[in-house]
Length: 64
Image (cartoon, rainbow, N blue to C red):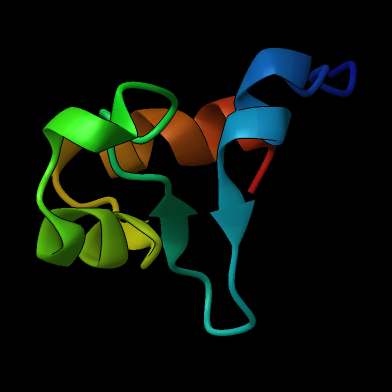
């Protein structure tokens, strides 16, 4: 069976930790910072863990 190609767009957007969790950025953090609260901007810097069916799909796309 041939090797599966890794999806490059998924590889750029998601990172895999050493324990195998998939991390993603939070939404709404690119522009219009003046209209957002400081606490929300600060919380937006923390990466989020992907869970559920999306995690399973991303693992297949990342070749894990």
